[in-house]
Length: 310
Image 1 (spheres, rainbow, N blue to C red):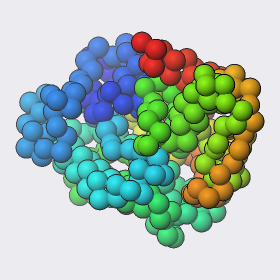
Image 2 (cartoon, rainbow, N blue to C red):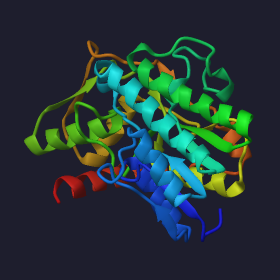
Image 3 (cartoon, rainbow, N blue to C red):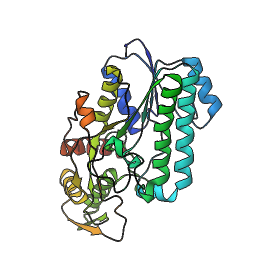
Image 4 (tube, rainbow, N blue to C red):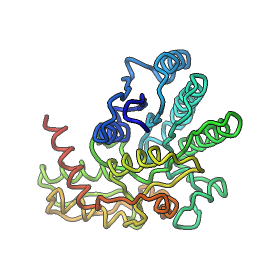
């Protein structure tokens, strides 16, 4: 990527998109294109095609998606499938029509089978059944990966896909009805501390293993791959290490300063037993995560306090 080239970041207000914009700005890229939902509805095919044709970006990062935790994925199944399919197909096809040669599609680790061997290799895609609670979201993301592969095969494009593990960081979603486990824990621990509660209830048994990547590390990996001119198959982006939900909750409790005890509600769903990414392909391409989990949670908690007390 040259610093004078145009780069469109779709979804720049979200946690991932805003991190990519920050990383590009730090790298001296001056022509970063962004559009709010009010300025450009990514569900509107004609509007998306007109915008991409008019701006003709040299690079496009697709960080826009409808996202949520287990509960949101399970309840709003049609919304997650439909909206994510439409957003990605509108952007990928519009990019192709406008002659955009380089594009990065951001997927999710939930694309892999529920019981795939750990750690999850890129080659285990489509080798087994998905986790039922977020199957619609996963299917939409798999379709995006395959769409990029198809444009590369048929038209010689360089549309690459990356699969981030569980993410957290600035601009995260702390809504308890729709958030993922880590931001939900941060909010619940903070509110329990403020109320002076004796107990913090955590969903599930506490035994599932999860990997967590700080959003700015993800952005750095994405820009690294684009700058390297990577043109291969999908790449996992993660830390290569995981913790139990119990260990995660203990760390959040320590960072937030909650003095009570943890209680695990085993009647709530655990989701996939373990989800650790094999990041050997990413390491071979010269990139490794740098932000430790506790340091990342400290930054995320500072962001939470700033946003909720602004």
